[in-house]
Length: 370
Image 1 (cartoon, rainbow, N blue to C red):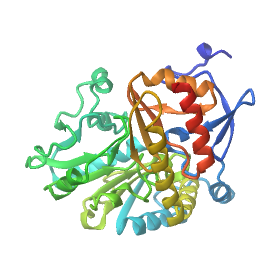
Image 2: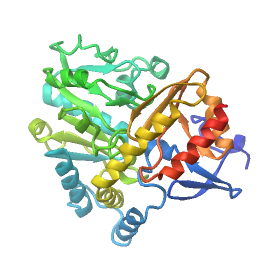
Image 3: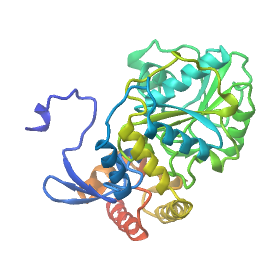
Image 4: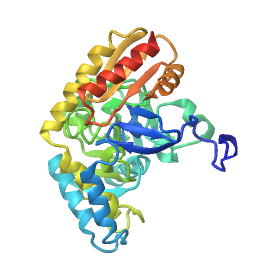
């Protein structure tokens, strides 16, 4: 079947490559060609493809029970909630199925907790595609076709604290590192100012969380403890799951019936996510920080690279040429990357990537850019 006849709605710019297998940092297409995966499903396969511990946990849970209603208790769900609470330093969890759902939950929680409809978000931000999450995404081109959206949202540039004191604002929503907005880390002082405002602070860690930046949560590097955190992407290494964490100090606004998700807290996804948490050891996180720093340093000297930025293994290379053709040429050469805007190439390999694999990726990228 040709690409043009596949009965899927045409909402993705799919490359004409079909991946059939994955192992660690490698993918294999239908023709048997091997590729270094420095996209990681867009920062999702945190521990690489078919990680043995995560695979075993998912298989074991599949052999027990796949789904139970949230009207009953579930051991994998409760175990994961306990693990995330401990890592956070005291929090309550709501599980859903994706990052955009986690953002929707955060918007609803903040409205219920504060009684205020105002939200401050950032220009260039990305928080999802549903109506609520799109309303707080600071990219007009993505919003335009669906307006009117939520109307009580103020977008400010990173560093601009002028809206934080607005008495009608109940939620400040920030990505510690803007992902789709060009892999731009926020200044810690700016995040600290948001934490001090008279509004709930939600850090969208859908892309930066689960060890991606060299600590379990990126906020650990910023000197703040937010009221709310959203997680998804790398949480279960590729199985669909999202999560809203509410700090113990901010808990208590939701009661029975205030929110729900049929598939939220799925036992298989939660078992896999708990296994991911167990693998995110201090040793691995140190490795992530070191490899990420090395990648940025080496890539900064490549042709056409204006700036190499990011945290850990969330790396953005700003180019003086369009990113799209570079990503396509790298794919042809056996390296899978994504873009993060018109002129930024994004590298989000599995956290277990070795120095040798990183060197191989840089060599391919250098050849393409030359």
